[in-house]
Image 1 (cartoon, rainbow, N blue to C red):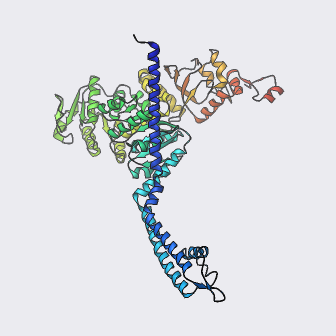
Image 2 (cartoon, rainbow, N blue to C red):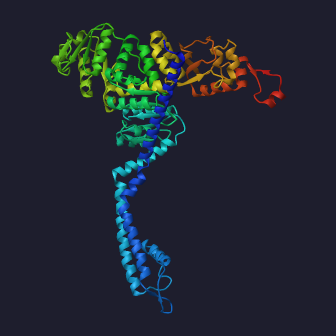
Image 3 (cartoon, one colour):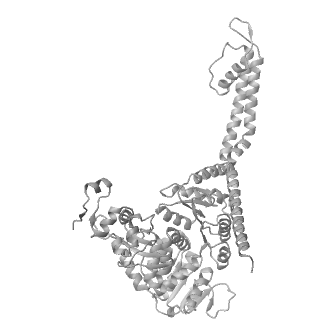
Length: 603
């Protein structure tokens, strides 16, 4: 057994070395980012060097010529112009202002030289202006200018923000949801067209965006990876290797920043998880979990999809679970494999339709295209209870759903939508459950970023049963008038709830009393608790008699007015006293002096 003191010292120095290496890496990113952002001025000087030299030479030769060519004063005596007068004359002449001849009228020699200088200046200015216009149209210059503008906007951010790498459909949906929460985000994407679309988005705040390769750590640094206000990094590109590069850079350079990444294979998920502990979202794996939940507990699936849609979303339609029986799977790609494995693990028989050999021994495999009637007939759809159209082609999936329903109208249908433009068609088809990978990713990331308590609630909610979920859906629908109410978090700490410190420590802090209206305590707030977190233990939908304790965290759903009223109770002693006892206590020192006797509340 080694020396404990020596082991402790070695671990301490190793941690310090790791911290120094991280700081050095961040400084290298900052230096590279600064060099990239300041490249504009060097590019201008390099491209405009020749035109500027030509202009300077024309100006210098013209000034020198005026000083050398003799003139005459007002009496006809020889007179030579000084350098200052020559410089002044050429300044207003070359700039086409033309004040006149000073201090004496020019001789013919001087006029000839000024005439030559004028034409030379015109040629020089034409050359310089043409070069400048060419530079303004140059793609490299415009990129450098955009880079400098982007870096300044990111540097000026003072509130927490997200770094979103990839602004496809998933990034756009996430950005809208994050903006709806009043939070800021920064975007990197390789497509200039997507970055330009940021200007068309109806966001409440300006969104800094840059068209760049997100695999470059320098661009990640420019986008705020080394910024103290960066609170999370989200990698949502459609290339798993690119997302892996973002996870690597964030884990190595900013290990304290949480990372959420998109991945579509288990192998890539494992490679990402080798770098710290990123949260990996696999839309196909998540849809498999959602499908199993929809089959087992339709109300729980309805509640899950509603909460992940964000505040203001209408109540989704509650499906009907199919009876036990066989399923038919059309499309055995990444989605098909995930769903087949999930269904078979639940003891459900699955017949797979695939036009290409899968390389797996499967007795329930039908070779061929599901769009062909003869192939679809081999699956015996009339005896099946469920059907999945999971190919990567929307036209094929729609035709498969139509053909399957024509054979068996009672089928439970799950379909995959690949393109946003196909949304109206799939909506009209009214599938029982629909996979839109970009929406699954955006909703999943939103649930993790909006508040960790919502993510905890979503993970633990299915275990409480379908009847419990149905009651909660009805309660939220009544509270929000058919739309999802506002979700927010409350921490019962001395810093965030100073007015409740003594009451919480007394051991009699009931949740029902906590949710009274500080304007009229007989009227409860329009809010309902979804989750209470105490240490590591979570209680879902606690009842009115639940006793609160110091340090509890609550996830609440309700009206914005209820949130504002509750914030008053948390920090104002007079509001707390009225909510708990019904006594009206003056809030200021002067009024307490004038009215020492607290009067009871009007009932």
